[in-house]
Image 1 (cartoon, rainbow, N blue to C red):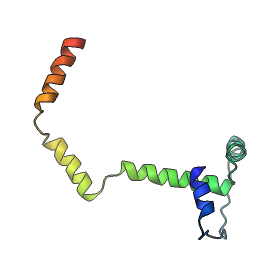
Image 2 (image 1 turned 45 degrees about the horizontal axis):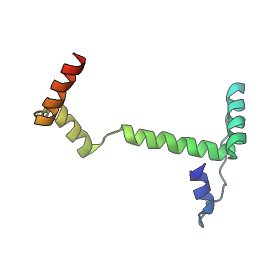
Image 3 (image 1 turned 90 degrees about the vertical axis):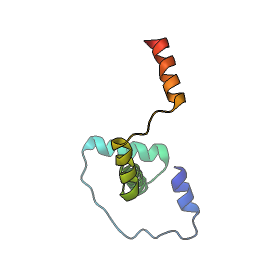
Image 4 (image 1 turned 120 degrees about the horizontal axis):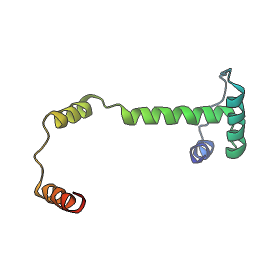
Length: 97
């Protein structure tokens, strides 16, 4: 809801001129209506917030270019364990076997 409040305060509010029609199961319609009642958002705002969330999550899960290469390199060529890591593992084994 905070994101929607921020959008409402924006001086450059985009006019809503586009339409999307959906066919959903009755249970989905009840869920959407309940979310609308609880949040005070419109169905369109809920769809927008949901789409933003999906894209944000996808962006966190997908590595690209340099990040992907660094991750794969770290898997293929892991660094040697540090002294502190070795000591921590030793303590862990003493405590938990």
